[in-house]
Amino acid sequence: MANVTIQAAKKRFGDVEILHGVDISIPDGSFTVLVGPSGCGKSTLLRMIAGLEHISGGDILIGDKRVNDVPPKQRDIAMVFQNYALYPHMTVRDNMAFSLMLAKRDQATIDQKVGRAAEILGLAQLLDRFPRQLSGGQRQRVAMGRAIVRDPQVFLYDEPLSNLDAKLRVAMRTELKELHQRLKTTSIYVTHDQIEAMTMGDQIVVMKDGRIEQSGAPLDLYDHPANLFVAGFIGSPAMNFLPGTLRRAGNAARVELADGTQVEAPANAAGVDGQPVIYGTRPEHLELDSSGGIPTQVVTVEPTGADTFVACRHHGTEMAVVFHDRHDFAPGSTIHLRPDLQRAHLFDAGSGKRLAA
Image 1 (cartoon, one colour):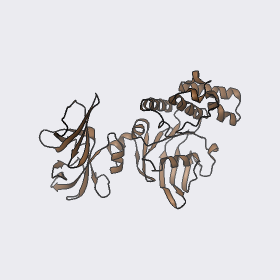
Image 2 (spheres, rainbow, N blue to C red):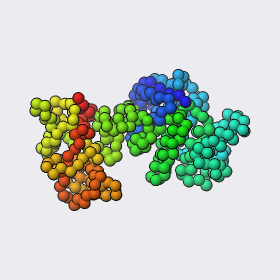
Image 3 (cartoon, one colour):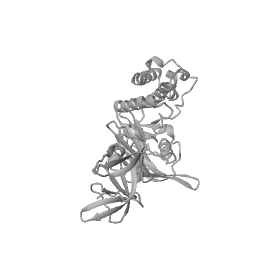
Image 4 (cartoon, rainbow, N blue to C red):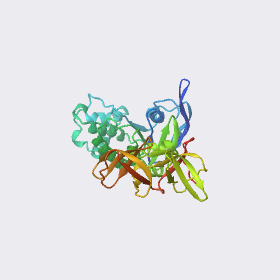
């Protein structure tokens, strides 16, 4: 195991800079998730750590060793790919043992390591099968087993669950997290799925356009997003954003929305009187208000059993609400909503940064 340090890492393709001086500290034994939309640079950064992409500037350290010019096979890392990358003509046993055979390890060591990995991953009964005889989840476990047998300092995962169906993804998510808890090997995981990021990571790094928007523990990002992008990206359904103007009178602060509705500003919100702002509130932090609140028109009602999801609209702005009670609103009807002031947010309309005292 080892910590991974990325210092001012840059990546250029010709004259186009893809990564703009990225700094990340990944503690020994942690599970760090790089998350962001397609094209943000997360997979490129992972491939740079693996040595599959050349670094254009800055440094990458695994442990105390600078690995900028170290070949991939000498970095003591193991990578699990999105498409499994299994050899179709080899059995599960041979796929898992292949890297050890290349390293000329003795047969007893190979059998011991493959047997241990197969036991951990529940593959002991499948060792003599070929990849074509396995399900998607089983193939992904074989790919992980091939990484485990190497006993690397760092595991690298490049969207390993994206080819699986929704139910299997949830099951594999649990298996991956349990595997990390058992092995305690430093892991770096790339995904565009923020649910995977929230449920699996000790640390989340949110990326956009080759830059880091925010990093920290999952619930810290959820509770204290640094800007509009992080607030909208972390959390499902996404946070509601309502444009308005901050109004201050003495110690009181309110936000005047586009239709003239005034809502109390979130607790501890900063900003000056007359400042254009964005009022942010998560769907699960809204409740019905019989004495005022934000008037919204119901568009659809989607009962899920435990919750009721309501899509609605306020003065042309789409909103989502999650009620933990059952409601049967008629489409087109008007409901009034009150945000939880302790968990709402205020953002500057120009810069997108959160306004917090």
